[in-house]
Picture 1: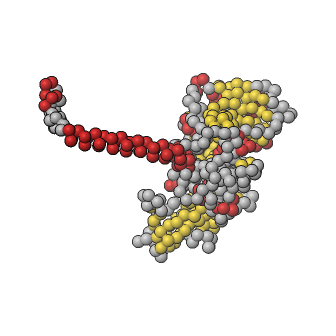
Picture 2: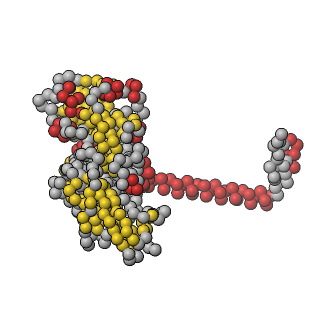
Picture 3: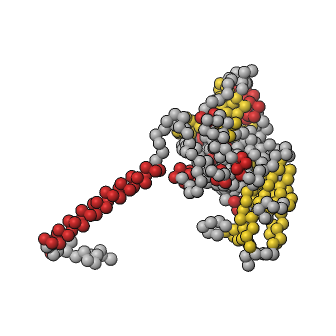
Length: 425
């Protein structure tokens, strides 16, 4: 049996041996006192430095109407770093997959993930209706079902490519994803409740709440009645055949295919039919195309047309810069728009000086992204810049300059993606 042995240099720790340590001389004691005092001073100074550093990271006290921080250039702010750690984009190597693997879809959480129990869950439908409803998750699942691939995109995608950079989640081109959502269509549910003649908007309220712009509120957004009853709008309880992950809205969320992701309210608590426009924080103050803080701006609605590139070759570990060998490469990616099907994708390998048309692939569903591919033959080593530009059936094309769509909140930034690549042997 192993026995505990005294640690080296620790003899004399037990019994009468405690007094065997050599006594301190007066000079040694004074030196020790000076050392301790110096250490205490260093600790005090360290605390002050920590307090000063923390002060830069602590936001001001919530004040009603307090604006977001000013735009930035250069290094990311503490707020941007905090948001970037908490929220994540889709891994761009999945851009050749019609359906994004479960767990790889982009994620944006405004406040906290609420802890909800599917067995106790109930959704209320009220407001300007003839027959208010209260439905359990089981009752919702018993209704007619719909499974459909839908591409979702955060309205802030492309924000970090703008200059100066609006301070919020510093997305590049990765706040995207396509899941196969399963749920029940919203329109029959509203028809069952019976909208009154003065119904104007449908308000969707989530269980999550917090403070934004100095105002405490639940996350909630509204849709015009005409948008809420569109084909494909559903109350979803599953993604890719599995129950929703907690961070993606379990047990029930809204899915609005044509709109940016903020419209697809998660952790749905209530549906309320309104006879007047909703003026909540996330509707009237946030998700607006604003030029200045004083500007009321236009509301963010449908997804703007966009194409993204699956990065070719291999990456540098730290910078993610891409390297490929000379030869034949098949460039791939996805394109989508909330305004209709993709009509054309053009690809450039010289930063936009010359363009060639890509070949479009088959679309999995009406609201899913369109695959595209283009062959790149390259023999000369050196640095190249890949770019892809989409045009939808309504004639909308991506701007070449990301600042052409600059706005104070960094919304709808669909400027053409530019991807630097080095060809080396």
